[in-house]
Structure formats: structure tokens, C-alpha cells
Length: 323
Ligand code: NDP
Image (cartoon, rainbow, N blue to C red):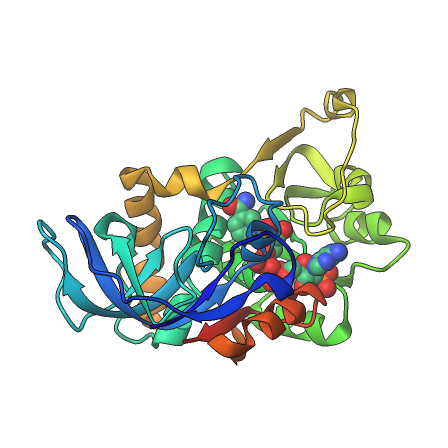
């Protein structure tokens, strides 16, 4: 089968198109014919060796994908050959076939295509766990979404709306803000504005936001803290700037505010939390109220171009790679 293999960490140049044996599903695994792979910022960090965990090399990147079940390993029940499913597997998606644990398989509502299903797992489950599990956001609260036209950003707007939250969306261009507005953001602001803190405070009647989804980090982190309302929760979800943020925790005291981390991986290994998130999302997806925003689509051969596209901040929604 065709696959992209990484034998040393680095940028898009280390993605090597190669021919590898098609895997056989072991006990508890299923073999998927991969139809589409969602490209996440985390894949880029993982290939660069800058992710939260070190990659085991050689590696086939691709943490989320969708495809049809080609074969079932010993002991797998409740899944059928030919069924379209998604997978949250950590690695292995950049290939024509992938053998994954049945526990990594997620159901796909019938109205979604493979491409839409591949855009779903990482962004929508992260948005759910950020807003509901970590921030405990309540209806009517203000949520600020950074990089709001991106993969996680568009998912966060949609999930926040479904939870009856009011969204302030930040992004780097008017075209991106237009998409955020279309998805239901109440307020859209260019993240390049010098008066951004004041603009956010003004939009919230001087209060600030109750929940802030921080995905950029770096020097802008100090401004994010200033946008928080009394009792506000800032969630550290990512650091797309790849720069260090520093702050003095004492600044949180006066407003009874919190800064907390979010990482999807540990949530994924909690079946009860995953079930809770799936139960929330399934009717929204089935009714079309929530619909993954699919961006540019690239072939496996052009995986490097897909990396460059996301790194240069050109994407809206989820970039897809189709093996
Ligand atoms: P996106 O599709 O959102 O792409 C990244 C976006 O970040 C860009 O489009 C850009 O938006 C913004 N950005 C700001 N500064 C930079 C920079 N210096 N270089 C590149 N992009 C920059 O990616 P994802 O949805 O995949 O991920 C968004 C963030 O969320 C990442 O930090 C990622 O690591 C994190 N994440 C974390 C998870 C977790 O479990 N903690 C799970 C999923 C994502 P703009 O041009 O509008 O500023």
C-alpha cells in the first residue's frame, strides 16, 4: 500500500511517500480502508518532534481518519465489514490502509461523508471537552474562540452555539471572520487589532469573557488574561505561535479566575466521557445543526503541501488528505 512514512523529525520535507505491506488486523483491531484523513496542527507538531509526546520512529502520521472496515481482527464485535467509521488513533492515517484498535473507532452518523467524518474527531471532541468538561460553561456565558476559522475554531463555534453560549470569534482576516459570522459567532474581531482587549471588553458590556479558548499562546497570552471576566476560565488548548507564554499567577486572584489545560488524549481513554460527548453530538450531526467545515483537500502525494498550507495559516476548517 501507499503510505507516508517519517523516519526523522522535521518539517514537510521529512514526509516520504513509500510502499509498505498492507497491515493485518491483530486481536481487538480492525483494518480500515482509509478514505480521508483530517490534518491537525498537532500532526505538524508531532512530525516536527514538538508535540506533547515524542514520536516513535519510523511513524506513519495521521491521528484522525475515516474509512470503511475492510476486515475485523479476533474478538471484535459490534462492527461490520463495509461500515463507514472514524478513528482517533494517534498515528497511522497517512496510508491506504490502517489497522487500529476497535476502541479507537467512533461511529459516524449516516448523513456524513468520509471527508466530513475525518474532520470530526479531534476538533469536535476537543471543543466539547473544553467547553463542557473543563470550563463547565453555562448557557448565556460569553466564550472567546481564537483561530476561530480553523479546524478547532469552527468546531468550537458550532459546539458553543449548540450549548447556548455567546461567541466572540478572533481570526486574522476579514474572509475568515465572515465564515465565523456565518457559523453563528455573535461578535467577530480581527486578532491583529491593537485595541483587542478593549474591543472584547466593550462587546461584553465591560465584563470580559467567561471562557477563553487559548490556542495561540506566546506573547498574546498576557492580553488573553486581560479579556477574562470575573470568575473567567482560560483554557490552554494549544500554542500555535510555538512561543513560550509567561504570566504571574497572582493576577488571577482578584477576579477569582482560572487557567487550566486541555489535552484530548486522556479524555479519549475514558469511555464514559467519550460516550457523553458522542451522545451530545450525534443528534446535532444527524440533524445538520452541526456540520464539520471541510477546507482544502490534498492527495497523499501532496501531504507536504497540505502541511505548508496549514502552517501558512491559509486554511479554513479542516484540511483533508485523501489516500
Ligand atoms: P487550525 O486549523 O486552527 O490552524 C491553526 C491556526 O492558528 C491558523 O489558521 C491561525 O489562525 C492560528 N495561528 C496563530 N498563530 C499562528 C502561527 N504562528 N502559525 C500558524 N498558525 C497560527 O489548527 P487546529 O484546529 O488543528 O489547531 C488549533 C490549535 O488547537 C493548535 O494550537 C492545536 O495544537 C490545538 N489543539 C489542541 C488540542 C488539544 O487536545 N489540546 C486538540 C486540537 C487542537 P489565524 O490566521 O486566524 O490567526
